[in-house]
Image 1 (cartoon, one colour):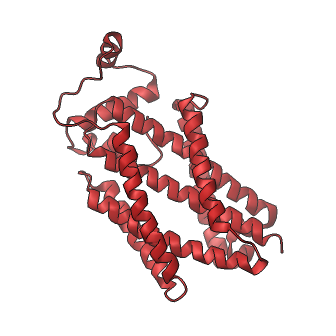
Image 2 (image 1 turned 120 degrees about the horizontal axis):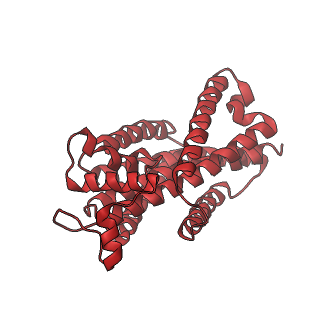
Image 3 (image 1 turned 30 degrees about the horizontal axis):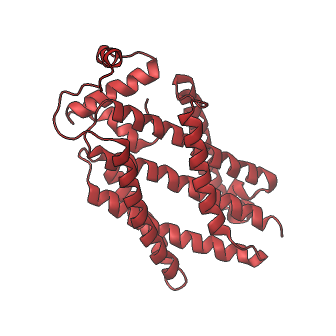
Length: 285
């Protein structure tokens, strides 16, 4: 299944671009098979015999434990960066914007680099942590004007709750990531992206008190809620891509790319929840 997340989606395109080897080729077949409902002959034979999926290459294959371990390591670097960003925000607010730009560059490097680079992944987590720490401090100070406490903690809890709920819904097959789900998500995500760009332009002209469409009364709150829902549901696409990658025996190093993909989506989810809570708090004025 092809993921909305460009990091995990790269597994689908590497082989077509000329050259990542057997693992990407098998990953591509897996995702295409998942989206079309077709099972490869090798997978059928493996299922009939109870054996693991056959890989033509050598070396360690990625496991779920690998992905979990790399994700936890990334979160440690993210946490360290966020503490630095929070502490620096009062005296050096420019740092979070520099971190945002550097993080964007590192994200693009990780997405388009053919061979996954753990140092670049960890650098992205650390730099994004600085940005998240700074932007969280900004939102926290903003809502304190209306005597609202606990904004950042609530956003963090909300992010992990949303992750847990989506993982439960996915693992119990309540949410099925199939072709129809993918098409609906793509339409929704493209539509939301266009609205977000239009809102940014509107914000430059002072619409919604500088928030753009997100600051326009109940319409803004509804748009924020849509952003949270879309970010949360995008996790299901990432879960499916990871599942297919593991099933087809991608090399262990790809666990870094998979954990990076999850981190990208979780950061987006956190920012959407943080903004939603801030706008709701400020609307109480």
